[in-house]
Image 1 (tube, rainbow, N blue to C red):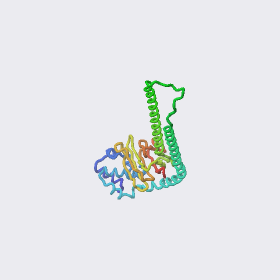
Image 2: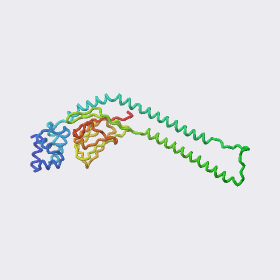
Image 3: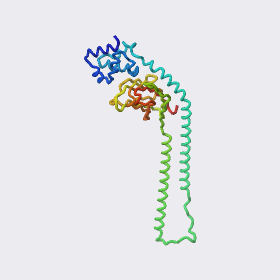
Image 4: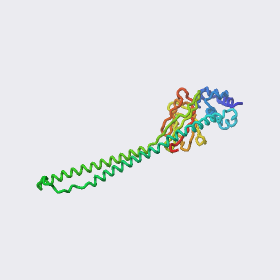
Length: 308
């Protein structure tokens, strides 16, 4: 007996209808019928075939791992689906490496120039302050044209002199505030972190597979995947299987966050791209192909660090 027939027989023995099973597993009824009939080509892909069979088996009380091992020859293999896009991704990455290296090699030069300008500005400001403080006090004796005042006028002169000193102190305080603001602006410019997305290969067909390049301005890389309205099947893997996710992403367990700091390539298979958002380090990705027209999409994402 084939795997689909065994699942159907167990379901009927338990008295579970297809509508009830659909509500329980969140898998469309037409996919459940395709599994029972062994029509795996109807499913969106090999990842979906294995995941849907697991959900079906759990719902009718069967051990999913034992079932998959027993009928592994009938179920489509994941490796056959991922080999060819992976090769295209490597070729695309090699084509883009020289251009990206030339662009990013220019960034350190800009930073150095900005630092030099900031240092010159601060030095000039300090020199001006030093020159102002070294001006000699006018100690010349009054000339014959000077007005001789009575002793009673001394207080008035003292008041006027005091006002002048206060103005000088206020000017000095304004200059110091200006220096601090300039330093803050320089620090902000040098600490700016830039993250960029680039489409290196746009997918085609009914299930488009696209390749993108994400350049991170930091060593930390955090991938966020969330669904806003409806549930979607999600599969995420990396080249060394440090990341391996096959699950139904719902509005309840969304968003899904993945630490990809040590990952250079990610494979993401999305079942409902129209309601799914993919972001890395807060920078949202724009789907290369219209997600409303092609809801099932596969993404290959190269991850590079700016300093590399």
